Amino acid sequence: MGAAGDTTVQAAAAGELRYASAQGRWVLLATVLGSTMASIDATVVGIALPAIGREFHSSLDALQWVATAYTLTLAGLLLLAGAIGDRYGRRRVFLIGVVWFAMASIICGIAPDAPALIAARALQGVGAALLTPGSLAILEASFAPDDRGKAIGAWSGFGGVGTAIGPFLGGWLIEAVSWRLIFAINLPIAAIVVAVAWRHVPESRDPDVHGPVDLLGGAMVTLGLIGVTYGLIEGPGGWARPGPLLTLPAGVILLAAFGVRERRAPAPVLPLNLFASEQFTAANLVTFVVYGALGGLLFLLPIQLQQVSGYTALQAGISLLPVTIIMLTLSARSGALAARIGPRLQMSAGPLIIAAGLALFARIGPSGDYLAEVLPAVLVFGLGLATNVAPLTTTVLAAVPAERAGTASAVNNGVSRVGGLIAVAVLPAAAGLTGSAYLHPAQFSAGFHTACLICAGLCVLAGALAVAMIRNPARRPRPEAAKAPSEPLHCALDAPPRGAG
Image (spheres, rainbow, N blue to C red):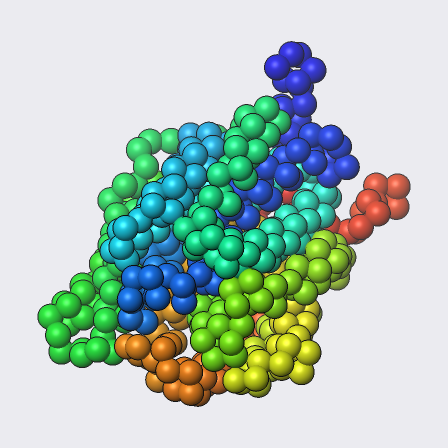
């Protein structure tokens, strides 16, 4: 880049990039597409699970592993990846993750059997862990404080669009050709992200972090999650069997040891002092419960629609399309509103609206009438997401100093993935769904209805947690001439003011 380009990059790296600028739009495009590529797999693969099960003659626990292998490595390595990005450059790690993810997608598409697909999905999760924290941290570090709310709101809104379009395209590919082609969706997206990020995204890092990365801590949390997840998925088949009997306690012990190590490590992947902020702790508790409920139900919903209601893969993919419109229309406005009035109202009401939507999904039965059974649930569900997502992410990032954005983003992403991971492992058995239940429509439908109510109850709990624990940041009076069009959020810690995830 020339001198002018260098000046722009320096301004962006210092947090001065404007939302309406050309480079601001390029940065937003790269981060939206990158994070969408990682999140799209959860919904696209969910639509493909019945087809995968039929081709590989798989049981429900094998399908659980197809979903959780990806989430497992993603959740386990997010903290480590966030620390690496803060130390060595967020753009650099982001780009490595994008390329890794694309290569793993090719391996998924040619997998000869279920174990090979599960292993390839775990590799995909590694790539997703490298790129996911960087996408949000790049926005937080690049944009000016009073534009961060709009940038993050747009990021969540457009990301929701991409995530919702994925099942539509994936459903068409499953019907027209094969479920294997759903993994090819990632390849052109990855090419665009690499080209845009290489040219337009500024590099940023935490200048106060030095020394080696805590690889041992990263290994401990990843292996601990593997042990817990394996035990929870395999346990319903017999808790006294050697597998669950050994792996579940071992996983718990490793996670506890990880917590002890992080208190003493000189450069921990999970700086526990982040949780000194009550706002940060509260937002992550809400994240864990809400995203656990979402992850568990969205694993079961495509199976219900296809195996019970008789939807094709394409129809199942289209069924959630209204969420796209709602997120696109309302997410940026939700982020801007939270920047003006504080996040407490939306973080309290959002989970309750989501709970109502999840409860309405329990009305879906064998007829699967879209207008009467599916659409009302989808509309309420989408409104709840639009209300909650942007203020939630903003609250997490506003509770830490700007230079800790990568780590804070990784922690919050990790918390959401762990919530979904545990829910997918536990919810089917809790709802009475095990073995080949997905092949028996009446049995699966009864369990699905139970699961909807369990997940709705979890979201009500999340709303109660937000009411009890989330606080609006105090506003600082400013001279009239200095006021921006919309009032930004202010962090209670030693950090610059933030906007509205």
